[in-house]
Length: 106
Image (cartoon, rainbow, N blue to C red; front, side, top):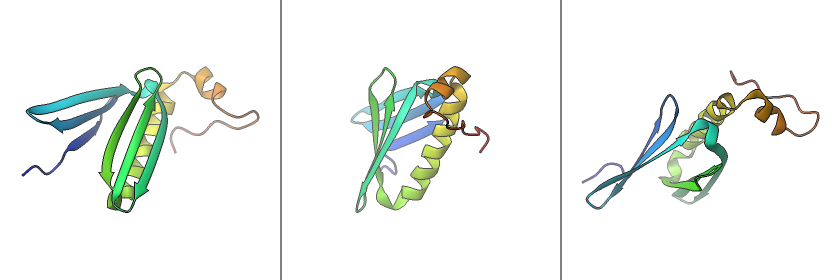
């Protein structure tokens, strides 16, 4: 019996997803500076986190809805790392006019 079907690793340069497949697993790595948006949904216990990237499409990860708080913490961590990986000019361009940039240390 397998305990996990998906494993997410937050590493020094990006997030890696390992997904179990028949006969092995697939590996997908997304660099922090390529992360564009996060989309999450939960319907009872069926959760899904989708990470949209700047050029490589999207990575969609199913999860148990009871882990919603853990996934929310993961998304906050990935947003902070993605923001820190972008050049300062890209950070300013992503803000609405007159908004102060977020503190990457928060």
